[in-house]
Length: 442
Image 1 (cartoon, rainbow, N blue to C red):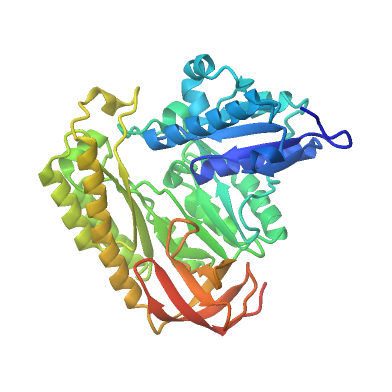
Image 2 (cartoon, rainbow, N blue to C red):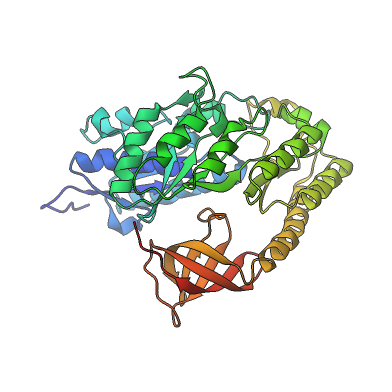
């Protein structure tokens, strides 16, 4: 294949899976660009001669998507449409030997901690001084900030510790420096992510230091929203809620995956919490931050989940009325503790339960959205799409939550700006509104 004679070959970084993988891809791209490589992200096959696939290996569907993507680029390499193919990320970390045998077209495989070795394939040294510098792949006005790596939890269904290792917190000073860099380049919203946010600091500072980190990040000029994702419910640090109440920069929003609400299932999941304790926690959170938006996720079809257990979960969702809910079907993962249990819920039952739970949540979401009609919210606008400016309230995270739509025919707002929007119509997952004012942008 011919390479452009006047410049380095392009490198296409293809990202699969969660936001944590996206941050890893952004770091790969930043390192390569500082080594004078051209980097594109999720581009078509004809747009680059070299491809790096950053894989997900969390559940069966994610693994299947990762393998399918690798095979597509392996075919492109066999046909001479790309020259080199590298694979990194969680799937590669966990199944490297098997994948090497099955897909020989891949030039090399790298795990989740192998960035220096990946860079060596490009004659590039890993540059520690670039820590904090990231050329983000999201719209400029929001960015994910990964505050730790790995996980020390022992959830029986989860393979993350096998792929990401033990929990390692990043220093507060390093995270603040990265936040300042992002804010300087236009980022207004930081979305804090980790395998488990509330464990932050226990390894490095010998205490749960998330409240101190939030105060430090809220002091960064230009940062207007700080959003919290993936908080573990057991031993939740309530001081986080005090910071949320004190600092307007910290969104009244919490993503707290609960996974289930039946005590027998929670015990087998090794979640270290009961339904009664979960209900008490939710009530305490809502008492301390009355207008908080709570997002959670549930896992259906776990080994031994009876009809009674699933009914208990449905009633729990109806009673708690969460603002946002995601549902996953259990995936029987080798080397996890749950793998020793019989995967005794048939696939069609898992699917039916997931759909039933989402139907319940759909009605809750519609009811809550209808209550917002006539109210005015501060909205951050992400894009222009199909004749609408599309944005989010403080209670909505990108890609997974509700959106606010304002007619581009009747109103104008710059993407990346905040504006006040009065809601005039609502559906299950969308709010429609009109601009009231556009506050001065910082």
